[in-house]
Length: 225
Image (cartoon, rainbow, N blue to C red; front, side):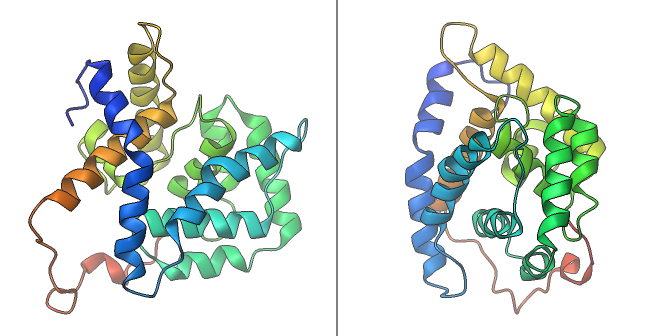
């Protein structure tokens, strides 16, 4: 889907297909028997976690267990990097609580909020964006590869600078799509872009290479996102 598309009906259709894309992807990944159930993880991330955070107002925070579940959601919906999950699962609960509480209080300063979260081992700007999106979907969208590619033409740069550009573009797009009475958040825009990209991928001829035939160069890099 062209990011510049201004037809609200096209965006609404992509967004409405989100759950069916999650279910299809979950079934596909379940066949590998190596990844958690995406449907239940998405329910946790999209509904349960935001509710938990709201209940903790005026000083919301995240626990290590919740951060671990969020990381499982991120990696299962995207690229599986178990080392990142190991890192966040071993974090001290008090450290996670303190960092997340500071991050949430920093909003609407997105740059500062991300910085507060990326002190945690295994948490880069992309994971930080997932944390912030769960708390403030009207401000901070999740930095998914699919949405990054659509909005910025690049899904390989996980820097804070790139995320801030991404936030600006999705905020503007959400405002544009909401101008005729419909309500779109930056997070809605991200999910619509992800949904459309996954739908296109699943309907296209199989082109995935056997991972044994062409090792990924990035697999050896130590990075957190």
